[in-house]
Image (cartoon, rainbow, N blue to C red):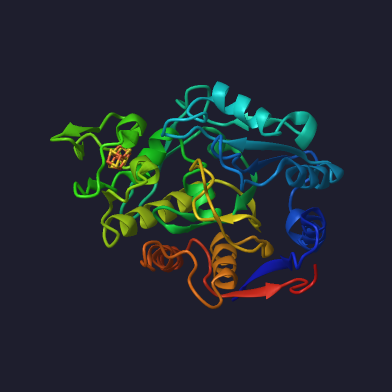
Length: 354
Ligand code: SF4
Ligand code: SF4
C-alpha cells in the first residue's frame, strides 16, 4: 500500500502561511496525539554560524497548534561529537537562546536530551547487518509521541539530509553518533594540502598532525566525524565515496529504525526552505542550492524523505556531491529493504497552492 505524503507548495507565498495550511491538512496525523500527552519535537538550531535552520517563528506555529489540542509539546536536540557550541548542554542551550529559541519565542521548553555532557546513553539491542545495539538518550525509551521537524539540506556524506538523518544522528547519544560515523576514514591528498592547520585544529580527537609539512590522519585514532572534510578549503581531505559512505548510510538507516521502534506515535515534517549545500551542523558560508519548495509531512519517514528528494530533484540530482550520485539513493534502497518505511508513496494535499 502506498504511504501518504502531504505536500504544501510555498509557491511564493509566506512561509508562516504555508506551515499553517500544511498543519491544517495534516490534522489526521496530529490528531493521533492525545490531550495531556508530552510530544517531543526533534529539531536542531544548527551550528553557531549556520543560517538555514528552521526559524523560531515556524516552530512557534507548530507548538501553538499542539497546545490548542491540549498537548504539552517540548523541543529537543542532543549534543554533537565535533567541536563547537553544541558539544555540551550549557553552550548548546545558550546558542539556542541566542538564535531565538527561547521558551518565550517558541512557546515551550527547549531541552538537550542527553544531559549536560552528553553522557546519558542507554543501549538498546537491535539485529541488523552492521549494528547489534544502538546508543540513545534515555528519553528515547520513554517517549511515546514524536514529531520530527527537519530542515532539508545537502549532506557531506549522505548527499541529502532529511528526517532519516535527523532521527538517526539527532536522536542518538554522542556515543551512538560516533558508531554511525566510524566507517568513515578520510585521508589527506598531500598534493593539495597547504598545511593551513584548520583540520588539525578542528579534529575532536587530535587524529591529525603535521608530517613533512603536510597534514596526516592517524586512522587508528580517527572516529570518522567528517569535520576535517568540512573545514578543508583546499579539497585536500578525501573519502572513499564508494565504500565508506554506503556503510555510513546503512548505519544511519539502522539507527533510525532502532530509535523509531521504541516510539508509538510519530509524525515527520520536512521543511524545504533555504535548502543549503551542507546540513545545519556545518558552519560558515553555506550556499542555498535551490529555491524554496514547501512543506512535506507523513507518518512514514522513508516516504516523506523520498517524496521530498524526488520533487527537489525532478530534473537533476541536486544533492550529488563531487559528481557522485548514490549515497542517498543507497540509503533509500536499504531503508526500503529493512522496512523502515515505504518507497511507494502518494502525494496528497494542495500541491500547487501557496
Ligand atoms: S585543512 Fe586541508 S589544507 Fe588545511 S591542513 Fe588540513 S588538509 Fe591541509
Ligand atoms: S580525522 Fe577528520 S574524520 Fe577523523 S576524527 Fe578527525 S576530524 Fe573527524
